[in-house]
Image: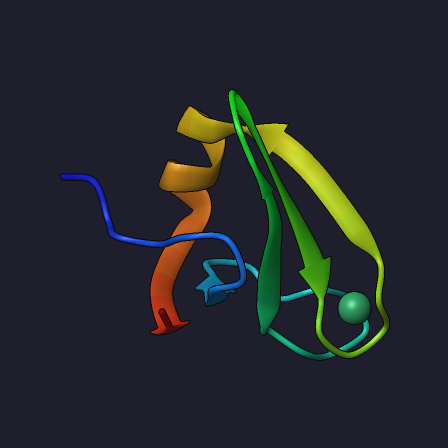
Length: 61
Ligand SMILES: [Zn+2]
């Protein structure tokens, strides 16, 4: 099942960032998804299928 999200959505991942927050903003969507930590600003890029696996829930669409 594919969860619904779009560019700019705030999402929660299954594993939180070491900085202690678990809110990420989607800043790029393509074959790869790029997310940015809402607290420390670090960005991570991963393939879309991996993102879908690691995504826990969408907080803000
Ligand atoms: Zn962080």
